[in-house]
Amino acid sequence: MSHTMREATLSIDKSDWIAAYFAAWDSADVEAIVECFAEDVVLEDIPTGHGAKGKEQARTLVVESLKLVPGATYKVVTELVAGEHFAVEWIMQPAGLRGSSVGTVAHDGRITTNRDYWSANTAAD
Image 1 (cartoon, rainbow, N blue to C red):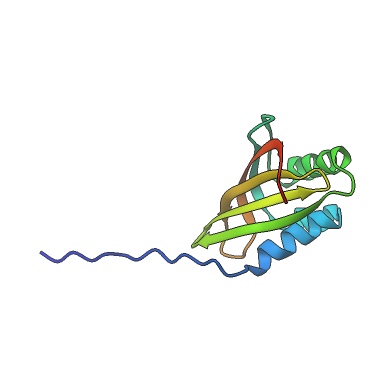
Image 2 (image 1 turned 135 degrees about the vertical axis):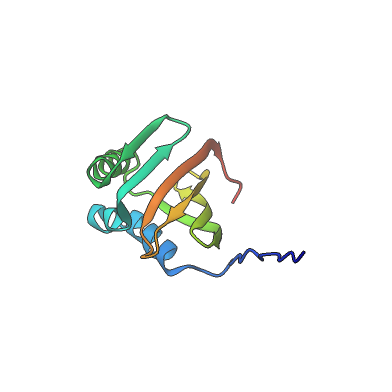
C-alpha cells in the first residue's frame, strides 16, 4: 500500500493581481476593480451582510463602497496565496480600519469569491 502526501504550496510573495486589485481600490478606479472579477464573482461583506453575485451586482457594490469611504487607501499587511485560495490582511486609511479578504481566484487570476471581514476598531499603526 503506497501513500503519497501532497504538499500544499503556500506563497507569501507579493502576487501581481493582489497589488493591482488594491491599487485599483486606492485610485477609486471602478473599471479596474471590476476587471479583477470573474463574470460569476460572489462578493460578501460579512460584517454588514452586503453582497453581490455576478459582475454587474459587483460593480454596484463597488460604486456604493467607494461613496461610503471616499479617498480611502489600503495598506496590505500580509498576503497568502495557495493555489486558487487567497487571504489578504489590510488596513484601510485614513480610518485605520483593520480587515481581511479571503477567497478564490480563477486560473486567469480573476477573483471568483471574496469575503471581507473587518473591525471598526482602529489599527495601532
